[in-house]
Image (tube, rainbow, N blue to C red; front, side, top):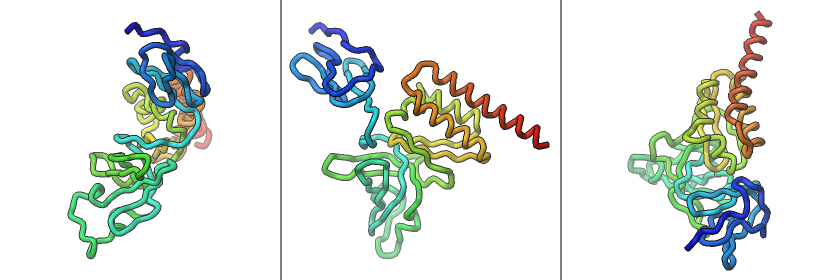
Length: 241
């Protein structure tokens, strides 16, 4: 079957009802097929991967997906699991057997020895359906409790731009600031810097990326922003001496 062309440009902003493509393209997220045409069902940016057309929403909370790495906050616990706020309409569950590598004795052990209310964790979504809460695991390497640091929130659709192609954007920010940064695909970012002034530089970068995610040449502008902010700090230090 001949594949007809897209009817809109990639990264074009569309609204519900806009026709995106015709022919044998496959509908992805927030796209529906009616007859031979694909229609947007959400306000957002058009993207194409292979033969699939989808829309990246500009508004809305995080929708969990199996395999996503998220950053969440412990908000409650029971005898054998924790409840975790993952910046979603869905409250996640972290079962004890998916959190620790030792046998848990429900009579002798206490969950708060491992995670307590208010603790921030880096976790992976291992199961989810629209009728059950997301299930988390912290057993993979690099996951678990995050100590110190601050949390910042952006729209989940901006996370790929913050990461950059093959990690180029976030690695640039880490290298230039020396800060530790972990990113959740739920739009939550954990930042820990020895120098609080460098943390503010990271925050300025995050906010700029959030505002300008749809624009070209953003990596160069972020690099320039970091250079300018570091220069201001150097000049301020020289003045104080």
